[in-house]
Amino acid sequence: MGIVAAGVQFQSNWLEILSSPFMRTAFIAGVLVAVASGLIGYFVIVRGSMFASHALAHIGFPGATGAALVGSSVFTGLVVFTVVGGVVIGLLGKKASDREIATGTVLAWATALGVLFASLASGNTSTVTNILFGNLLAIPSQQLVVFAIFLVVLAIVLLVIFRPLLFTSIDPEVAEAKGVNVKGLGIAFMILLALVVSMAVTVVGVLLIFALLVTPAAAALRFTARPGWVIFWSSVIGVASVAVGLVIAAMINLPPSFFIVTTVFVVWLVAAGLRRERALVRPTGGHPQHGDPVHEH
Amino acid sequence: MLELDNVSAVRGATTIWSDGTFAVPSGSITGVIGPNGSGKTTLLLMILGLLRPGSGKITVFGQVPKRGNTRIGYVPQNYASIAGESIRARDLVLLGLTGATYGLRRTSREQHARVDQVLAEVGAGGFGDRRMSQLSGGQQQRVAIAQALVGNPRMLLLDEPLANLDVRNQQEIVDLLSRINTERGIDILLVVHDLNPLLSVLDGAIYLLDGHAHHDNVNEVVSEELLTHLYGTAIKVVRTPQGDLFTRSA
Image (cartoon, rainbow over all chains, first blue to last red; front, side, top):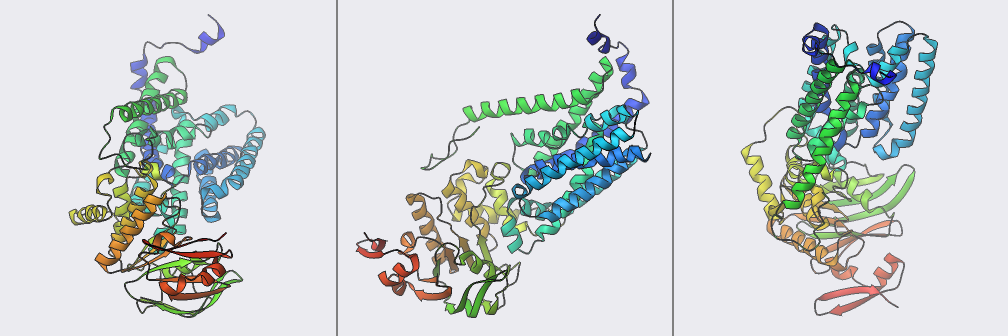
């Protein structure tokens, strides 16, 4: 047996492992995070905030490693840094495209700062790996209450601001003319996004954040553009991926991040393929019109 | 009904135009023309209450403009280019009705019916369930107009609604606007950079020239002297059986 094989071992007692308390904690945490990601994922895509969400995770990195350095809670460090970062990005300006260079520059610096903190806190490599790539199995059970509170707050706020947020996301000029507070909603959205990013980092880490925050919603959007259904299906995809990831992790005793992200990735690929099939066989509704664009899918 | 009394348009420290004193009569279709950067969009923003005039007074239906005026429907430029893949045409129109409402409220059957009705009115009844990205430029423009109309405004403001459309689609949108103007009896104000497609339906024009804003009825606007001055290049007006046409003269 080589070194590689030594790391990968089928565990015949995987069912037993799955029913253990720490697996239950991991599953509940994963579900809470996947649902929160599903709730906000549609808005991330509609607003074009994909890069901002990625940046927020990186901005959270020095918060997490800094917290580890001073011996306080990694999650608290994440939340503080991402929320502050979110408010700043929200205040900065109108179009995401105008902010990419500034955001990217801050992202790089924040990551470097995170590495510095990590080096200063010597002998803590597993903490850093968990922050970068996530580890659902490392989430303490006390964390569940915090996650649940975040999810409830997120759900309530999103329900209240749902329509104006959608309006400003799709059509900021008209929304502003209609008297909607575009900037205020933008900042509120970034704060909510910061909370979800902090949660998602604990599951898939700073570097894999896209997989939970964006990809499930992108896959759901292949089938429906109705906001409520996109949110529902992206939550389902997220929860299913967490479940599959945990089962495989229990079977071969490896951290679940890879399997969670791979499941999301496969769902996204299948969704893309199916949508193309459907587009090919779908009868064109109504009469073909002059100037009709070719369907892209 | 739009009235300007000695209005100046100011962006930052720069005065874009001044001495705007005119009244646009009710029920008219009015073009807003002028070279690039002459302050056409700025005028729309002032009418919408998103920008205050530097001086003077604007009144829309007898009131000073303020944000959230339900009597104005607005169609901005470059509509629906951003999130086109993520939203259906009918949901976009619905936002014109419910988009400013906070709180969880079910969309009523009445509201859905109004969306259907206005989609049919603009000739978009057949593709309400499609995503914006699946529609042609002309179809997207119809949906945008439907969104602006769904709240039953008394005035429609459109910023470059004919840009990026081919000649046939330009004509269809102009015909649509003319029909809306007649059937609903509402004012239509649209920014355009070419008056030609509109000449058959236009009542008047606001033109922004040499840093001043003027309004005239259409007969006076279609003069070679004025148009030549306005566009900064020699313009010739040609009378055709279909109506007047102006071209760049050789």
